Image 1 (cartoon, one colour):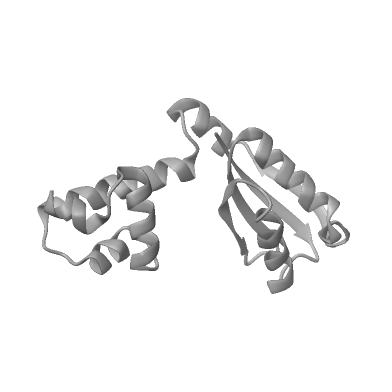
Image 2: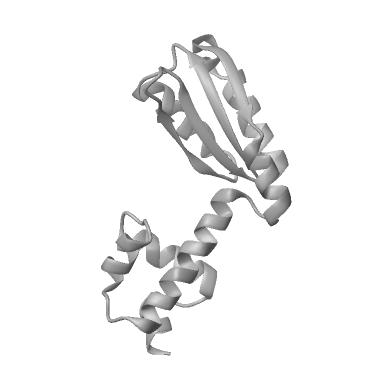
Length: 145
């Protein structure tokens, strides 16, 4: 697993650019996010198997977006993190958040929605899916066990 932070410069700000990146990502086994930066660049954080990540980045550069991109740069920080910790930063963050959630489920009476929000999930449903994938049971079942 690797995680890369990629910056795009050029005529890249806007919903269409970000939307197209998200559409391209659907064809690959990658996770991440994309956002506009105040300085006019677009930041892409992408993680996954090395071959999938690089194929995804190649697809972006081979798409209609290429005409909008003047420059693409990558940050080495995520690569160093992956080598040192043994997992991509986003994978580590997801792991850590779900460990915190498991502790909160056993140690507090907070609702699932409250726990989901506290660890950074936008919805209880997304939290429940991620929790079940990691621990093999739904959060409510985990709490009762």
